[in-house]
Image 1: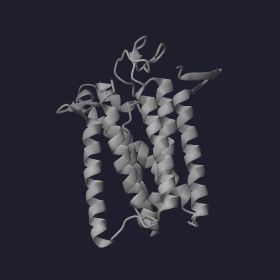
Image 2: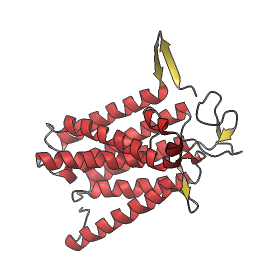
Image 3: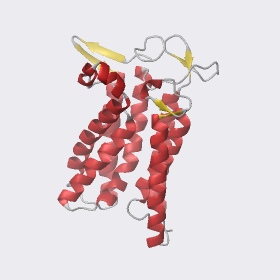
Image 4: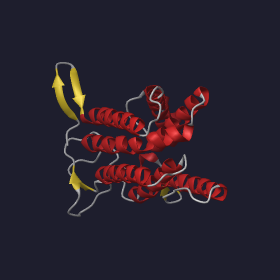
Length: 256
């Protein structure tokens, strides 16, 4: 895999950035399409998308800095590198919080819009992990298995050794989640927040399993589990408690 796809004079198009941009574009178009089909007012979609992207970027960067706090203490210059080092959970949390703040200010239904955006978040993540594959970041541990992949020009992953293709695994997870969430949204009539809760639980469980095969330990570990696995456990517990609380108020979260 080569991250530098095309160079035109001083301008270089990188695979990682291109896939991120493509994922955002496709996800945005999907949100607009679903808003139209579900007769949801589209006037707030662009603002929500822009602010959620900003919140997601800030959250992903902040959580990365938190996981790297010891290194930052020794080398504060790390915080000046804004192009590398992100944690997806921080991006999800930051984006949701930014969206909540906007909905609160505009007095529109937060959970309705969250459910509208959530499948597209999974879709964008699927494209983003393809970008990770092209760049070589978020790589897996060494393996001798037939499905291992070998990098030769990566600035992040170990080169010339077979690695578990965790980028492909998570990309497939996210694309599968996108289709599953769209199906549930069409087949059932979930209460507001139901699609978002389903995504948080399913993504966290899938991510928890994939983390066992990750080889980039730079993200930190505690008690034998990676930082992202502890976050996944917390997300599943909090979301499950919210589901149980909602069930007590309403007999069914999903109605036929």
